Image (tube, rainbow over all chains, first blue to last red):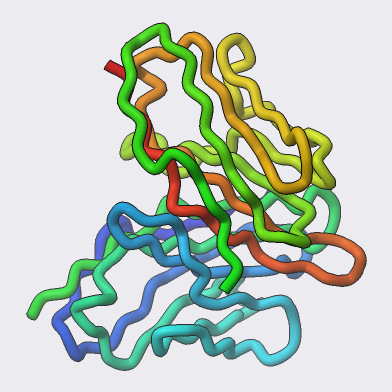
Length: 114
Length: 116
C-alpha cells in the first residue's frame, strides 16, 4: 500500500521569503502526485499535479513542485510567500493503476509572519 | 469552473437524530469520495464510488453510516442515529479515472456537522 509523509506539521515563514514544503511517498511504481491547499472553512483546492513528463510542475498561485524519483519526493516550492498563502497544505498520492484511491499526507500548516 | 456542490454547509442537531448530507459531483466525473476531517484524525476516507457502484466503504462505521448514489448527479451520506463523536467536517470529492484519462479529485466546501 502506498503512504505519504509530510514531515513538517507546522512551517513559519516571513512574508516575501521563499518556501519549501516537503512530501515523501512510498509506492512500488511512479504514482500520480498532487498538492492541495485548504483555507479555513473551505475544501481542498488543487494546486498542481504530476502524472508524467517534465519533473518540474507549475501550478496555480505561483507554486511549483519537483518530482524526484531517486528520493521519492515531491516537494512544493514558492519563491516569495504572500500573507494569503497561510493555509493547510496536503500532498497526495494516487496509484497509477488499480483502485485509484488516493492517499493523503497529514498536512502542513503554513504560518506567514508580516 | 465546474464545482462539487455540498449541502448543507452547516448542520447542528441533537444526538440520535438522522443526518443526511448531499453531494453533486462534477458532471462527467466517474468517481465520488466521502471524507471526514477532524483535528485528531485528519482526513479519513469513508466511502468510494466508481460509476455509481460502491467499491470501498471500509472506513465507514457500518452500523450507523450509509452512503448511496441514487443517480450520477447525487451522492448521499446518512448517519442514523447520530452521536456527538460524529461531529466533524464531511467532504465530498469527485474525479475521473481510467480509460486513459485520469483527473485528480475536486473537493466540495464540506458540511460542518455538530451533534449536541
